[in-house]
Length: 573
Image (cartoon, rainbow, N blue to C red):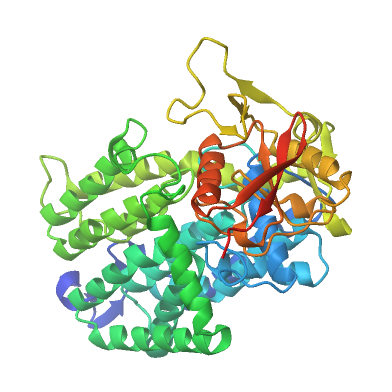
């Protein structure tokens, strides 16, 4: 008679059945699911490359790129990228709090002679191509098969999207660096928080991945680097992985020293100055949308906050104390990063899905408030993905929207100097100038601002509405017709300064592509154009306050239905 004995998997690490004195060791199932095998990891690698190739091909096939939203942000990105492509350096030659990695990949492809749309799409692809080996390594060493495919799809979709997310159906090249930051964050956290089940170069690959990603975040956006750095250090200390921490810090510091030697000390001091500008209370860019309270507890975001802390409770109550601590530590970082990124898109929910999935409580774990802990974890996974699905679907659908829009009428080409444009915008945003005007006798559009009066002329109480490119194109045509002004550096008293991209107008040395409330560019501008209807009345007022504080002289040179142009004289020595 055959007798079978079953050994406890928690103690032995395997299920072992004895029949006629033979032992069969079954593949170990991790708590989160069957671990990926070597053969499956090779198939996964092929899938990863194929998905990347399909996305890239779909985006590169159309000869023109139709942009349906955020053209102001588009012009900001093109301004900075084309400046770098022409030889300027961010922070040294123009002010921006965004690191050089946010624009350099696009500038690199522009320098090769590509058009601006293709250059931006290829920059996204190049960044993802660098990440592909890391994605594969993390999947092969830390994830189950299901988790690996979910992770890969999220990473590829996030990196190759042509929209910021948020459930929007627009096509937009703006703010791609936020998606790059989230993708790097996902790689970093999976490397640190997911225990490897296969040692595939772990001793050297893990510190390289952690150190290089932290360096990349520092050179991309400090709003990712600053909140994550102390948490990463603390997590590695809690995990008693001091060796990995030291190696990772060594890699990060070595990378920083290499960049210091390449870019120079002045570059980093200027970068610090630009960052300090946006941290001041009077900065025009303290946050990028909703308040921090709204990020945490508004009707739109409260459920995501509840899910985050429900995960903490389930982990702690089911005995997974360290996992609960990790969620607790990451919560403020996720909230702050979301707060600092335009659109306030909680992409961290993708990581939460993966983390709960990888650490689901055992079926026999203690119930949490009467609910089986494992069932509670599965419910949170479903709720998290449901909340982030609109954003994910918005990004996943952009290759199809790009292809369809390329065959659609109703668009006009965005004309740029140097014939570098393959961007098309909706016709009305190229041909029409639309503004909002206050009705006489009713409250003003900007009740916090005093009426703008310069040399006795009172500017109308109005505000530009979604036709920024058309207004700047009109201003360029008027400036080009003025002898003595054409070709000279002209600063615009508004949020953006891209006149030089659209015609024979001089580029203002030092001027910020996106105005943050400081005096950048004033000392080198010959003229200042004050729009009658600015996109941001508060920023127009802030720049003119800088003119007054700097004791610059203003002399009216030209007035039209779009602007008043003043010659700008420097203050007396």
